[in-house]
Image 1: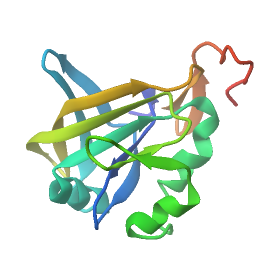
Image 2: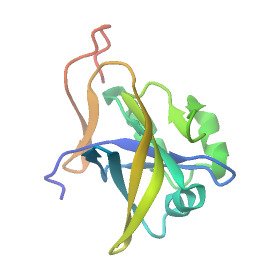
Image 3: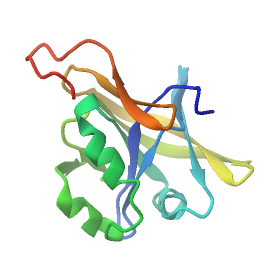
Length: 160
């Protein structure tokens, strides 16, 4: 699968067991109704956070947000909502889940279905709200590393 390029997102859930996790197993499923899916390992803290909240948010990362992707992939970061103290974010108006500052786009979703998928669960979410962020290059994962794709930000930011 290292030969398949994917976008990089951070999944978040709010509430007392709030959590964030870098994920590239995310995709659009349907436009009518608007549905997306994400896949989360059954033993991951994010798994229980999504199940417990019944809602989740997705921040689609820009090319210059590699540090955020690395941070939310690091198991040593603080647990619960304290992990968001180190990053810029706002609570999603529909879910309360953290939406990360500077992302290319944000989606807020209501969990509608869960499917077993080996050591992962496939979570299907109905999109409650979506917003575009700034323009710019996207962060992608390919061949075991981060890369960028897309046009540069019209404001002149190179999208490192």
